[in-house]
Amino acid sequence: MKGNRLYKAEKLRSKTVIERLFMGGEDESQRAISFPLRAVWVRSESRPDGVTLPRFLIMIPKKRLRHAVDRVKMRRRVREAYRLNKSLLPTDGSVEIAFVYVDNCLRKYSDVESSMIKLLNKINKSLCCSC
Image (tube, rainbow, N blue to C red; front, top):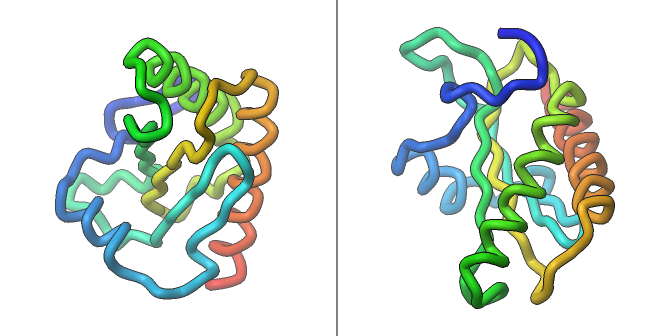
């Protein structure tokens, strides 16, 4: 799979994996915050489909942004920042990542992108050191 496109295989949809992502792992190295985003990640086992791409999930809580239009706008900004900077992650290892928006108001795309770059670098460093 080439380019900056987001494929369906990259989206995290499994309920059991999402539960394992948030319930499991008391290790602090698998959680990071770079305002206005927080990231939680876990290295995944081999998947039955054989794809080793990183999978991601974006959460914009209703508690933080009350209006649906604002949540959709922020979800698009976070997804775009991830799409353009996902090359910072290693492609050979598979990892599940959840990005959670933690601010109470809308942020500019440049703020979201700089936060995403910091988080992806932290995740990459964590994955490379754990090998």
